[in-house]
Structure formats: structure tokens, C-alpha cells
Amino acid sequence: MPPKPKTVAEREELRTLIIDAARELFVTRGVEAVTMRKIAKRINYSATSIYLHFADKEALLRAICDTDFLALANSLKSILKLPDPVARMLAFGQGYAQFALNHPNHYRMMFMTEHPPCDPLTSCVIQNSAEQDAYFQLKTVVNDVFIAGKFRHDLTDSELIAQTIWAGMHGVCSLQISMANDLWINWREIEQRLQLMQFTLMRGLLRET
Image 1 (cartoon, rainbow, N blue to C red):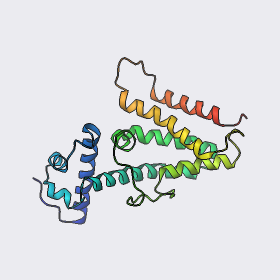
Image 2: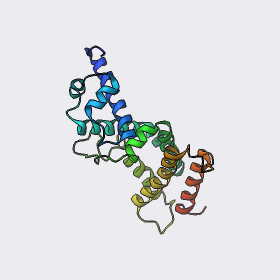
Image 3: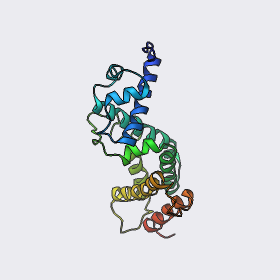
Image 4: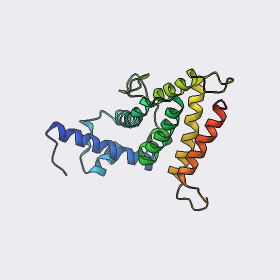
């Protein structure tokens, strides 16, 4: 068994190790099937070491969600500085997909694994903060396009537009993550599928120019 962490850096390193191991187990085995003892065994620590960082499995789940949603929001933050609203919206979708495909276990845990819903009252992810909440970022990006008058005149609900764009990109990403190795489907390249999904969404949502 590894020595007990003593410094702040060592304790933070162990906390990250616990989160990464728990995420993988939750994704592969299901949240209900995984115990704190199993997580401890995976990283070769005692269960007591985990309880020093997380009061229970629910607290660990919250920490994973906070960590991953913050990572997603931080990966998209620089896109918010792009000046053109439509270009910004397209880049946001591409950035979202890139995060999903580069971090499949994070994405599975966030959006493809059954777990208790994230409670904003107990989460460190502050709602309505572009710095920490990727969904608020998406709403902001879409609303900027809405204010600029770029959407079709019959589309009057910017949040509905945001949720529709999210659903389209999530569909492509989740299929890639869960079924890319299924040989019975003659998959086209993921870049082609993402681009066509964006093109289809934009053609249906934007005014003709």
C-alpha cells in the first residue's frame, strides 16, 4: 500500500487519483455496483483514505461531476472571445465535440451514465456563470446569435434552439463513443458526421443569406 500523503500536493494528487478511478469504475460497472471499497482496491489504498477526502459515494459523485463540468467549461472559455456570433456558435459546437471525443470517460460519466442529478445547491459549479457552467455558455452563445437576428424569424425561443443544438451534437458524440468499434455499421469519418450535423442544424435554424 502506498505511503499516506503528507503534503498538500500529495493529498491533492490522491484526490485526483480517487476521482479518476471512481469515474472509470462508475462508467464501466454502473454507479450502483461500485462501492467505496472497490474504488480503494483499484488504487491500492484503504477505504479509510478515501473517506478522508469524500464523506460518502454521493459526495464523490458530486466531486466527479463538478470536476468534469468545470473541465468542459474551461475548455470552451476561449471560444467566447470570438467576435462573430455565428462563427462563435459553430466553434462552440466543435469545441464541445472535441472535449467529448478526447475525454470519453468524462463524457460517459457526465451525459451517458445514470447517476443522481447535479444539485446546484451543493455543487461548486455556479449556475449562470460563463466561467463554470458550459450550458450557460451555450445559452449565451446562442442568445448572441438570436439578438443579432440571424435565426429564422419563426424561431423565438433561444433556449429551445440551444437545447436542440446540444441534442444534435450529443447524438453524434455519444454514438461515436459507444459504438465506433461496431463493425456492422459502415461508419463514415467522425469529422464528416460532425460537420454534416452542424450544417444540417445551421441550415434549419439560420436565416438564408
